[in-house]
View: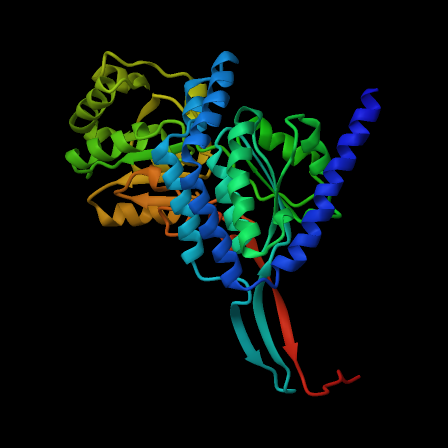
Length: 425
C-alpha cells in the first residue's frame, strides 16, 4: 500500500511539472502589461480577503503552538493586517519594476558582419522549498511571474493553510490577466516525500531554491538532481570598531538584534574592539539586556557585564533566531575579519566605525553576500534594496549572490543576426 501511495504522489508531482512547463512557455513571451496586471489584481485580492487570511492563519498558528514550535517560527508564521498589507505592497512594487525579460545586456558587431546580442531570458520552471513564512508564497510567486518563470511552491507544513489562501489571491490575479493558473502552483500535500519527488524532476524543473534551516538545505543539496540556488542560514555579525560613535553603536546594535529576532538578517554575534570595549560595551549591552536580550559573552565581555553568561564555542556559529546574542572582544580589525571568516555563514555583516579606512577595509575583505557600514544588518532584504521582494539571500557564488529578485531569476541567451554568413574552413 505504501508503494502505491508513493507512486500516486509521484504521478501528482509530475503532473504539476508538466503543467508548469507548459505554462512557462506562455509566460516567457507574455507582455509586461499582462504580468503586471496579474500582480496588481493579486495585491487587491489580498486586501479584500485580509480578514479571511488572518482567520486561516490563526488556525496554522494554533496548530503550530500545539506542536510546541518556538517563538521564532511563530513570529515568522504570524499574519496580521500590517503584514498582509506589506505582502500586497510587495506585489505592487514588483509590478513597478522594469521587466527583465528581453533586456539587452550587451551587443556588438563582428568583422564578418554578425550582429551578436546577449539578452535576458527566464530561468524556466523554479521549484521553491521553504519553511514557516507564508509571505514567501506571494514573494516567490510574484517574482517568478515577473521574470517569466513558472513556480512550483512547497511551503512548510506549519503554514499550509495560510500559503494556500495567499495562492488563491495569486490565482485570481492570473485569471483576471488571462495567464495560466499553472504559472504558480503549490504542492498539494504536506507529505515530505513530495519534496523528494520534486528534487528529482529535472525533466520539468530547471532550478531549486531552498529557503529554510540547515537541515532543509542539507537535504536539498544531498537529494537534488537539479541546480540549487541556496539561501543558507544567517549567522550575521555586527562589529564595533574602536572609532565607533557610541549613540550609533547602541541604536544600530539594538535594531540589528531585536527589531525582529526571527529573520535571517538579525545579528547573532557582536564583535567589539578591545581598545573601545570599556567605552562601548557597557551601554550597548545594558540597552540589550533591558529589552530582554540574553548575552553570551567571552571572558572580557563577562568582566564588563556581570549579567552576561559564558559563551561556548558553539555560540560563535549559532543562528539563534531569538533574543540571544553572542559577544566577543577582539584585538582589532584583523581579528574581527578572521572571526567572521571562521564562524560566519557568508550572509550579512556590518561595521560601525567613523574611521573610513577601516570601514573600506572591512567592506573589501569580508567575504559575505552583503556587507554594510554604519547600518543595521536587518537591511538584508530585497524590498529594502528596492527589488520589490526577494525569494531569499543567496550565500553561494554561482549565478546570484545576496537578495534574489527578478533579475537574479533570469539567465541570458545570445541572439545572433546575420545576412548569409558561412564559417570558412
